[in-house]
Length: 124
Image 1: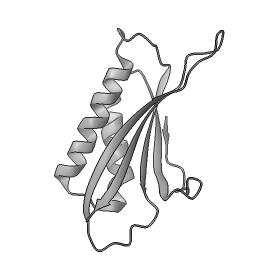
Image 2: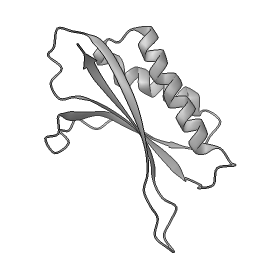
Image 3: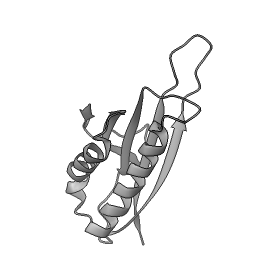
């Protein structure tokens, strides 16, 4: 399922959500991630090389989360992209970091949620 909510300020912490994608295990995951990331990140006018680094990181993380041999089974994975709230800088050199989160499940509840969050930031 593809979702792209309008940018939100996350409790005034300086980050906006640029988009969210809910992935389920399927053979077309890489294509889905590629298509979604290209559309989500297009307003930032990123270089092809930098976009490819983010794409490779997202595909690797999603593949690892969805492997059938993993200890915890996730029914789906959320892929989120965050950007600085204030992107008015003339410097357009971007960097990113990735955080993976697993919500702890309580006894008798459904499997925990898994999220892969990308934070893009301006360097300089």
